[in-house]
Length: 152
Length: 87
Image (cartoon, rainbow over all chains, first blue to last red; front, side, top):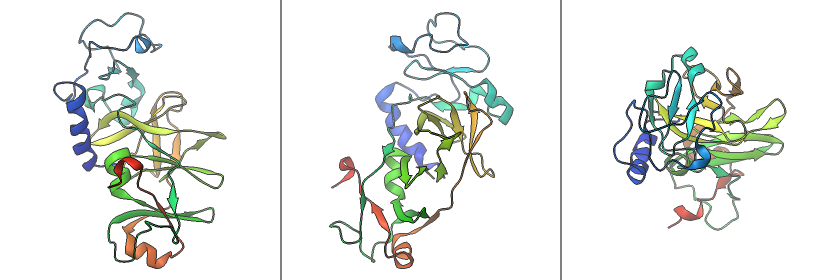
């Protein structure tokens, strides 16, 4: 599960980006990167300052605009989105390196930390949850021909 | 753990930077579809974007302790801590 512990991390990241946390607010950051301006097909006008962006549209701290109108179908109202750190604030892992039992650094049997384990396409792997959950949130992986996202 | 294949194409998933009800909203970098893990659904649901209303199915996995997992799967490989997290 991608759960509440992640919020702690987000709170830490938030301090680096802007003052205050966006509990249910749409936030405009003055330093909007120009390449994000107007990249939403549903936005016909220039964004000027902090303002509601209209029905079903939210803007994150990097100035990127997200059309979330369709999500209302699932009960997710635009006012309920939080933090809005931007899509590059937390980078995912890409095909992380794996250790085999004979490799240095492979954990011993005494270790009791939590892992997410799986066997798929003949590959058996374990992912330490604190690593993925606390720092990257997700890992993009391959198990043979199968492309998998490791998340909780 | 979820499949990230849709219509024969591979998606790269990442945190969107948003949360909703204290759960991360993910997005794929190819189409910027937002994906959300609704409790009770067996996968990630596309909530907006080109893949809205689609599902990336959940795959079988087990959350457990390392010593238990290793006892049951002595051949298992283990994700190396990324460089930035090594002590």
